[in-house]
Length: 355
View 1: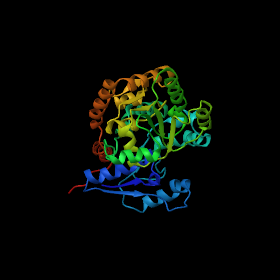
View 2: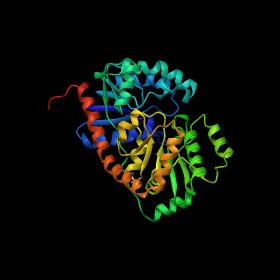
View 3: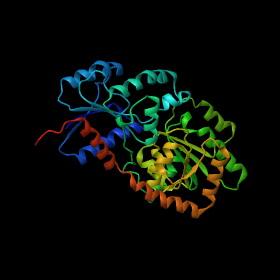
View 4: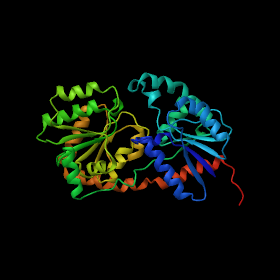
């Protein structure tokens, strides 16, 4: 087979979909060396809408690709070749209040078109598959679940470089860690409320480290940190590269991820791969991903979230338990398996050529 993959998500710095695209392409090449895989994207400066409506269909019509895989919700509408689209989540449709209005408007008319136009749909979880089938009115037989995995870089690290990373980032020895984009659906307002409650009701005194680039609609979040006088207890690192993230995952006292909505929930698995005990949300997609390997809480219940952090920070045996079961659980997820499942989707759509 000769497969084209959307290379647009690979623009730097890589975010979740960019890492998905990169890891999938690399793993496909490793597990299927007799097939060809090419990442394609427009020349710099070409408007995105022109690429999808004219540039990409024209390019595909002149090429010998058997199939196009849109790794970031998009496929060309005018193409005779089969296509696969990955729909990572339906946050824009199900939680429009957490996104910019122009993105929501675009998703409301584009996503149904993409789902209808694509020959097959890939989702990272059964939870998202169910949402796609119900919300976009798609036949379940058209949707295949291919779970994602932590990247190989995320392994436990115990060396002098960890100490250097913590020093450089202004992080102490005892800290609670969150990793992700600073945006409304990550539920960071409630996280700092739960953290403040922990500080005010116990003798515990950890730092809260929030590692991630700034999204939008979060001015109130930053104001709340100042209003609550928590600047000396909360460390905002901004976007970090993998080596720094691995150091934080490997040395945090507990990793907390109280997101209100996810398509899969990769950061908890990354934390588990580095040996961190995890507290995360009791919501369908994350429960599906982490199973019983994390301490699950209602992300809308500040008291439950705060109580879980207090318990974990106060109980070494509990931390060791979740660190151990998490490290075993995460072994079930590999990019090799993701690539194999994705290849199966391709092969359903591309007639196998005789040798």
